[in-house]
Length: 299
Ligand code: OOG
Ligand code: NI
Image 1: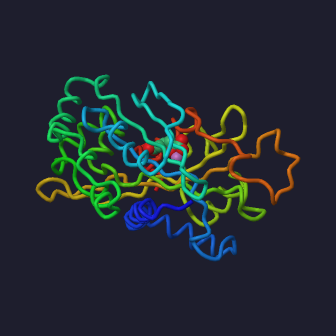
Image 2 (image 1 turned 180 degrees about the horizontal axis):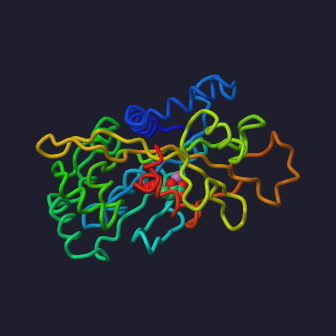
């Protein structure tokens, strides 16, 4: 079942994302060049991800309303104590749509100074902005996702936030821009259908991978394997038109293995529901670092 409004909202997110992250088209071109796909439309998008500030009127509870309206279902919760983040993943209304991963910074656990900087921006939002949008109007949702929720930050505030939470600094500037999309590798041809072989292909083509905790992040059950590029740098314009290079977004890759009980099924009968679902906190914890200076320094 397809939903034209959701199709348009997802297309709008992908358009902005591709403009900000040249690696997206570069990965697609490399896949075409090596005969893995004939066009970018063949890529299965495993999931997309957003980051939010956990304050009244914003955060997960606000952003999720958009996707719940399109038939997404909230699934498991994940908690990242060191990074002070909560997250949920959302299952799509039908399998042709990507899963969604939304995380949120737990503001009240930060130092007073950092909280004060964040609230000086987020306090400009005095009612849940999603409640004011007609969610059946794709253009309205698209413009909401790509417009400022608060004033343009100063570079000084951005740098101060980054000292305590690189996630906070990322969100204050990048807001709801797509954090990543995810190439599903398990249905690709042999030589490309595992994370190990796909990483080899990526590195052969010059892409830089996040190596926090190792280049391959593996769930304890062994069935969800993920990797990601280090975020693309963008020449950000701060208040007063002060320019500074900061982390933008990145590209992720995921391999979901067929669950043990379905391994005897013929290959052509394997569908999404036969593979490992959901996410994994241990993998995610390291993937977040794709936008952190410790990783982007590798560019
Ligand atoms: C999300 C990191 C986690 C996953 O697939 O586990 C993630 C982020 O960087 O905002 O994408
Ligand atoms: Ni992800």
